[in-house]
Image (cartoon, rainbow, N blue to C red; front, side, top):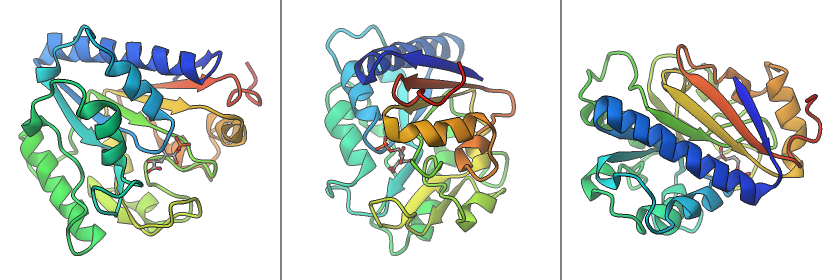
Length: 243
Ligand code: 6PG
């Protein structure tokens, strides 16, 4: 695990964009494509904007974009994670449309969406749906004030899901109060690399808890079996961390 403290959220966004481009270059060189699970919430938006800047040195046609979680709202709802990512990045760079996989939220229930997304992952990674989870080259994650990550909220049954690749969750205590669809710990922990993006003074307390390995913090359970975990945090979020 690596923790890198950036002066502020702007520097964090630039450092994160460079790290993502480096992961993409490695994956494309070694495997011919780059599979990334994008994070939702507000923190990643600046990073997505840096990636969308013109003349970024990457082969966008080899990017395969997925999502770590989604609010169970219509795709055009302002709370949609895929909507935010489309505005900030996906609609601004020359990706191959068939290689962008939003989590569907037009199914009858979030459980249906989770099952459909798992089937989508199996197809996209050309693996058996009842086998080990897909191995993302990079998973981007955030940290909630309550220690959640993706949509794995404290006290929710989704935390105990140890077989399905994707599951659903009732709303957490933090807004927005909507049902969620989320990758599970088995899938997150299968990743080659996980990059947490954490900014703001309100993250100082949960970050200290997570880095101390507090079992009450879902984010502390992101420990990839063979992958790396990097925490990119700004100074405000790092205020309570023992350097
Ligand atoms: C979501 C995200 C969630 C987010 C954290 C941090 O759907 O909201 O998946 O896990 O990453 O809540 O959110 P901020 O970046 O907005 O602080």
